[in-house]
Length: 179
Image (cartoon, rainbow, N blue to C red):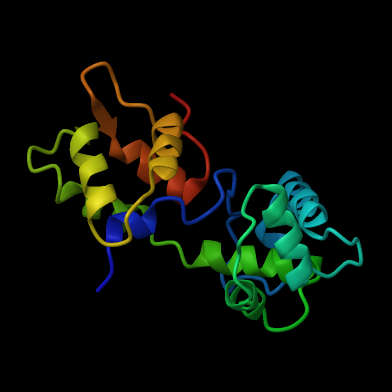
């Protein structure tokens, strides 16, 4: 049994908004994303493909991680990342991997229900300190950096309350609701 709250947070890229597909869906991975999103993924792919050969390799991953300050990544970790793909990671495979991750995200109502367990009064918010304690001490613990990123993306109000419905919306839709 996992930690549902930690699992839901940051599963998909912040701007990853899925296009609604017709009944039956489409097998074309490019139809899952807006053109602007495909361009953003292409830019990310180009950054990761350090040797510019059109394939993301273990060496590419090592180099890009090193450029971000992660110098001691184990070979086993890099191999596990590469093995997430069914074959060589070209741009189409890269995009497919993101599409599969997005498909795996739980529906908004399921995520909201997980938060509601922590909100017995049904206010739609929970105390920052309470959420931080849960996320840093239970299950897959958040690091200080992950907590900093969470609060930057979802700052609490002046009373220290966090709007979990907004967090749920962003997880499932990729952007904040228009107020």
